[in-house]
Length: 153
Image (cartoon, rainbow, N blue to C red; front, side, top):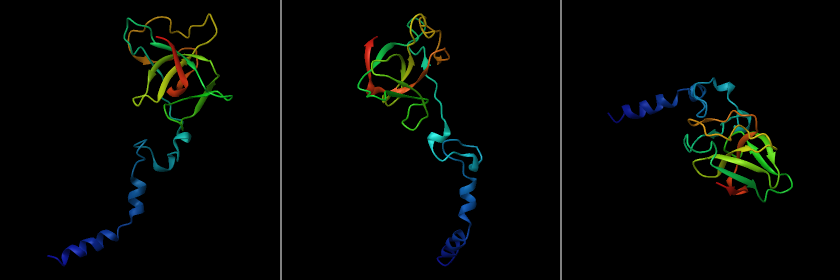
């Protein structure tokens, strides 16, 4: 019996492991052909829409207002998803105001809608019936929560 076990180990070592590797899906996008997978999240152009209506149908579509603080001369990057490698979709200047609509589970990112000059309210002046992705006319995305100072709730 002991002589058979090393034989199985040697047979297992003879398999071509590169074939197995090519058949495995990329963990972030299961099911897609391996050669179609981007190498980095930045290339993947992952988008996570900002969710509005998290406070229910009796309250505003976004629960707070915020202002960019300590963002420097280049401003604050607005990203398509809540992580640092996500595609940049815009920038928010020092003092720029946003509707704060949601936040990431780890609290490091805020889902925001950038305020536009009056009379445009970005479609957020009324409550919404249910949680839903923001599809209004204003720029929306994700910003670092460390750079937003809350100014109204």
